[in-house]
Length: 225
Image 1: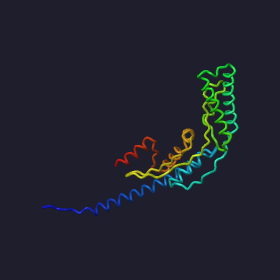
Image 2: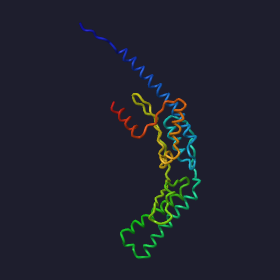
Image 3: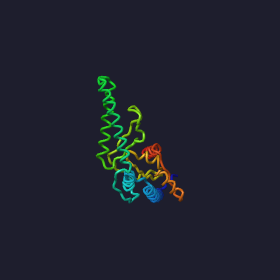
Image 4: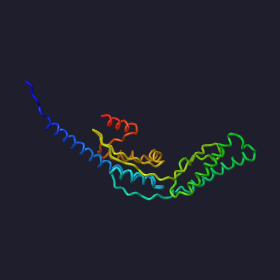
């Protein structure tokens, strides 16, 4: 004797249960995400407002806004940065003129001297021509010689924050990507997102911050199963 069991109704019911569970998880994650980005937005540093602008754009694109997108502005450290970039260029010119004066321009190392002078001129020009430019590494400009830690670079391009919600079988992930060139430096110094997540956790929210490595693992596991 053989018995055939029609479990299509059970399967359909189970799928509805899973879909309701996924929907509830998604909604709870969005509520927590909104709380996190609001705290991060309120506590974000406001020098040029580039970091804060990018955070707002990423949050709005991920659907955990709306957050107002501020207009960027000149850094309050503009005069200090300008002074240091001018000092860097003056130092590079000094070494270039020294090589020329000593008829050493035929030496292979003179190409490096020229590159450093050209780079210093370019960075200074970019800073002067960009209203909201920032300088990374300005604190390391070496005053005692051309061969010191003279690596200050100007970030003059404006980037747009990226965000989205990703859904796996058992996880809802809100991806907030602050694409500003100095975002990792700001986060390391001020712990803006980390502090916001900890605040939501302390209030009873069940949230977890994924490292880049773990995020890629989760996405890989989702794609494979």
